[in-house]
Image (cartoon, rainbow, N blue to C red):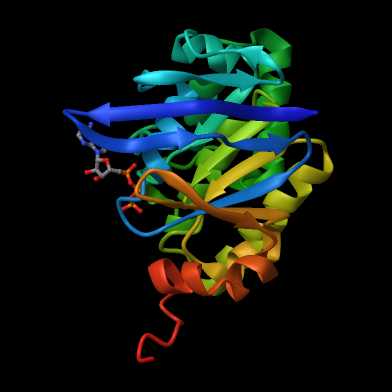
Length: 240
Ligand SMILES: Nc1ncnc2c1ncn2[C@@H]1O[C@H](COP(=O)(O)OP(=O)(O)OP(=O)(O)O)[C@@H](O)[C@H]1O
């Protein structure tokens, strides 16, 4: 059964096509990585899924329910969460207060407290609950955001470059976190540039180019695809 599916999705900005006939589908329980050159339309695709952009045409289905016309908050209620690349934390508030903001529209009282405790333990920030979010390291800030995104136990988690700016250790830890969430049943769609990280987590990879699905397959298939290498990975021999 699919968790996310798009049908002939198109998005134009003033005549410029940024999503073209995108027929995307991923299964429940899958970790999918979305890769592609700068400007390929990866963030736009996320925003379409989240309802931050309306498609020019086409449909979006979440767990077989059509969500194309739902507003963003309604999609969140259905079980879609996101962690964008640009930090969405309030640096002058504490780690706990940030978590509270993420959860308060969904839970109250004891259930809110226990959801926050659980999420903070998961991202290993329990000891830092009282610290200002702005004083956390870059990696910890990213994890706080992951904690905020998963605190409501979404069924689908969208991650936009979750390891950007991280040290190799932080990147490895983030990969483990994603795999742990996935073992608990969460489906994950991640935009990622770090191919080593993609190899660590992805069940399958989708390559976008000029708003179109250019290729799809396992990481081995994608890395062996010379056309992908030419447009993106920069490893193909162009000299022939
Ligand atoms: N609101 C907008 N108005 C007009 N054009 C836009 C808008 N948002 C994105 N675009 C254009 O759509 C194209 C796809 O952008 P998008 O940010 O989705 O690419 P991306 O694959 O996420 O790139 P990157 O890897 O650099 O983040 C780009 O040409 C961009 O300039």
